[in-house]
Image (cartoon, helix red, strand yellow):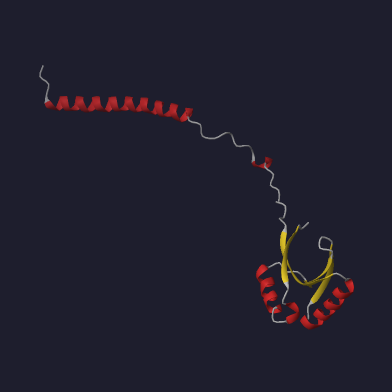
Length: 142
């Protein structure tokens, strides 16, 4: 029995095709095992169990321009009235328990540090306010 070149060629091609298919099948099974055994994520719970709370508002920083401090309320009131007229600003007198002094402050207070510094620099043009300074404090908002 004589086998021709064509028959050998066809047989070789058929053998390659069948062995390729069987190895592909094994390869798919192996890949499936790897995928099945790979940990990706825990089960994600439904979205409706999450609660999002609004964070508490952080304290605000305020800048107080203090223009004087006196040991008596009368002197503080005199200076505040003089300053209210001269500066055309509202003035607040407050007793500072820690310092045991009546402090005289520009009111309203500043929320912006640069604005407070700018106004303080303007005050330096007046002899009466050369010692003005900025007090920084925080106020917790409700």
